[in-house]
Image (cartoon, rainbow, N blue to C red; front, top):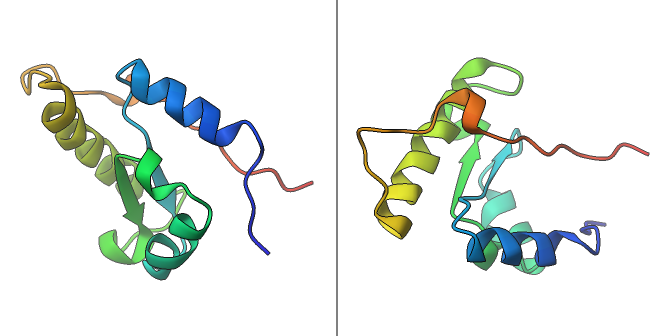
Length: 101
């Protein structure tokens, strides 16, 4: 079964209020975005998704992370009017991973 930690939605809500763009990078296919994220009540809290199949690269391939930064910049511009001349760089990004315990 799928589940989220109890602090995930409050964190995403806080990030949205602060103007922080959030998204998912997944090696799963796009069905994850169509079915599982909505079931977990996460879709409305995320600004973008990047799935391995869409970019022909899986984590840890840098191409999937590059695609995420591109999507984050588009979302940042659309949502917050961010200046495209000062795009996000890898050092501006925070990655939060899974728990395998």
